[in-house]
Length: 208
Image: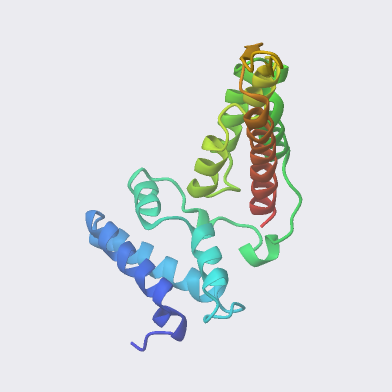
């Protein structure tokens, strides 16, 4: 059997090799059915993709899911996502966010402020229960920054440390808690921008 050109693409070939290895624990019939189904799905999904564009090919593979996750779902008897009815991945590009995704992003940003700590964790549950994001997206949404805006707002409640110098003696005295003013401002800017950047990233990924 001649291997389709798309299967010769390095990323696709590596993906199929990992799938073959992960599927070894399945019964022969189920393994063959799963691998054939994945190959057919890849042929269809990659038909309108430039095989020399690694970003486009990787996006297709990310939507399909990691080989070990696909096999784990098959072991548990769950229906494969790639075989579910509905429009093909290419037709879903630019689709509107679902209610779950909207609330996930909002709560990850300000949930910890609206409902201290617990609000962010609710957003986290919505993030990880959505099938619109890959595991990589979910990890980024979880760890940058944990708590969303709760942390920078909390830090902003503490007055910056103010230091003055006595003109006569040259001695420096400081009052107030928190970070020194020269350090506190840049840190707070980063803490405010990082959650916003992650929210934009998650929205973009979910719409794809």
